[in-house]
Length: 348
Ligand code: ADP
Ligand code: MG
Image (tube, rainbow, N blue to C red; front, side):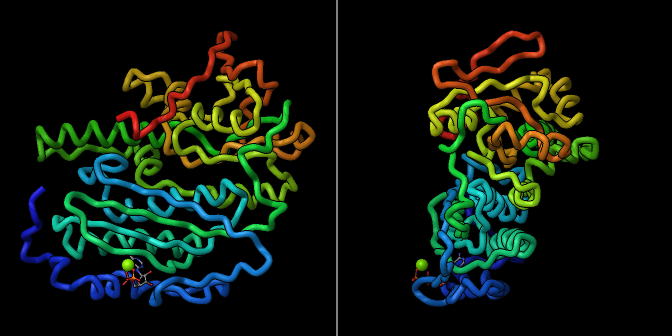
């Protein structure tokens, strides 16, 4: 890509590294008393007193994880935060701080990074997160964003992938497959746009799908809901790569197998409709689409009455002994083995 030469844009080199950091971070306010020192020294200082600190990092690379042809930078900033918070919620912990590291080529003017940071700021405000540091550098090509999230939890509340027991119920929040179908819509419209830049498509009927792709929300509400219901999950993972790959992770970590039921997998009607339009199988999309950022967890059988009627939760199967194999029971009552078809950027 060529250097941005729009005279209305400010080149990053005009500000210098320190000016840029100062400019991008001046709006961030510290809200938590656990943040003893945020941006401005060699390192941030965090005090979680008697709680355990839960840490997670994600790296997003242009061309691998996002395509700026159809992802607005503001949404990208928001989503980059969500991806990290989702991992902290999946430990049944509460995220409190993030650090943000970016590398941008000279294709990106200051205004582009301002948009990115506007999305980050919105996410931090809504989810009550302090931005406590980061790093800023240039790249030869494209944009990279790495966010690290810090959260806290009582040790006894932390939920690992490894805690599921035989017969535990398998539960998923929300619905699956919409983010993947949103990506299909955006990619299709991008192809149309390349041929006919005048086209003004009406995407309103796909708004749920597009929103799930561009502006996912981490399920902050689910650990809170489970606390209210007095349900402690035995294991938990967030769905970033797709249900099939996440259930395989839970099974492997817990040394068990699982049986899932096709007719129990939660699908939004717009996913079913768009799958018909694209000639795709909606179960396959729910299993391997990815980027749903829902929570997949297991609970004891005795907790069934506490969760059965909750509209946010679907019971989709149960854990089985290790040697049983990991299966999906289809609507036609046949057993299909679940394999790792989860979306994987390394396969691209
Ligand atoms: P150092 O030279 O020690 O890496 P920097 O000059 O890179 O320090 O950073 C100065 C301060 O600004 C530090 O507190 C750092 O965490 C923060 N910071 C740097 N880049 C970013 C960024 N992209 N977003 C948020 N904070 C940042
Ligand atoms: Mg630095």
